[in-house]
Length: 137
Image 1 (cartoon, rainbow, N blue to C red):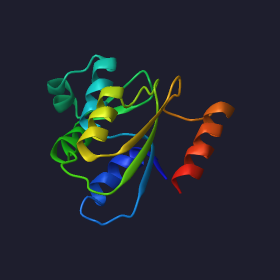
Image 2: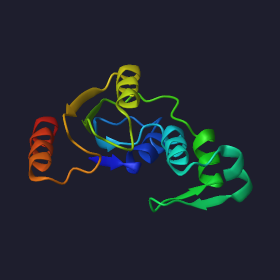
Image 3: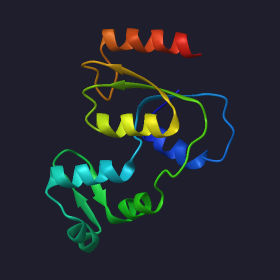
Image 4: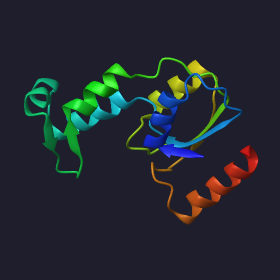
């Protein structure tokens, strides 16, 4: 099982690899979208980020022009491995439209946990995760 940012980097690294089955938990599926959302939260536009190169945010992340440029040059262009995704409806890093679009485009199986968050941490969320793993492994 791969989660969060690990999913994005796995999608990049293994696009052309035959994988029997992938399990993604709260995956980041569109890094450009995530960075642009963070820029909006911080009130930063692309030209300011390009000029400043790095901008610390009030929510503890540092926006980086180099990282943003990398993401723009390395968007996910194809994925052919069978994939199942567990996603919380209140995920604040990957919006539902993004996960549903990715799921439709690449034929993934999507399970949405209503009121679930990006980080599965409550006993209820962890119980759902355990059951989901048992069903998919």
